[in-house]
Length: 263
Ligand SMILES: Nc1ncnc2c1ncn2[C@@H]1O[C@H](COP(=O)(O)OP(=O)(O)O)[C@@H](O)[C@H]1O
Ligand SMILES: [Mg+2]
Image (cartoon, rainbow, N blue to C red; front, side):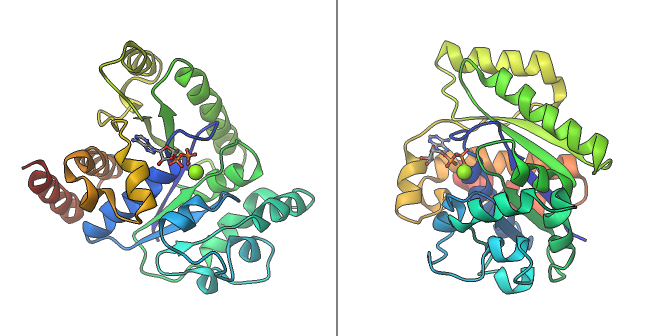
């Protein structure tokens, strides 16, 4: 069985989709088989990972029972588009609505090591579905003044999912993203997150850079576009694999890529 990780935050713009995209890339280069699932009707992850907008079926058809998950895998990704907003509404009226994604993922083809779930920018039913389907939650926070509040709200939803439908759900960590450590705001955000969540805050911080938007626009991985910046995500991936345990070989490979990128 793969390890499933939900990447969530209470709002948009905290770098979730970029994290999923980049971790998909980094973990794949580490030799792991990764499946990325887009759970945002905006379909940003599908764009980033170069799935044609007309690709069918998508996660909508899977969640509404019209397609098997295996049919909806395009390359490495199960894409989403605007129809997911309607699917979410329709799902709301169904019994077992929180379990829909979990049941779908149980039917996924064998051989994946890691499944990454890119949550929408809210803590609604789709995010709850992700948390019920996941083994681990990774919360992203934008390095600014209200970061702590957002993480606390996301944490509450993680706890609700754990207490109700998914007792084995664990917090993988809290990621400080889009950080500029030269600013007081970013430094204070990190301090307050560490005060509140201690060890759960990743040591790896993702620096803010326009290069992420550029690389998305050019459909280029940050590893190829700006290896000097990509070391942030390489460090995060190695740290996350360390927390997960196992994956020794992948971790080693990623550390080797990181050493080359830093040169
Ligand atoms: N480390 C970063 N530094 C600067 N901009 C970033 C970084 N990560 C992501 N971005 C940009 O910020 C915007 C929001 O990122 P995205 O990953 O889509 O966030 P979310 O999925 O949480 O809404 C995008 O334009 C993206 O290119
Ligand atoms: Mg997103």
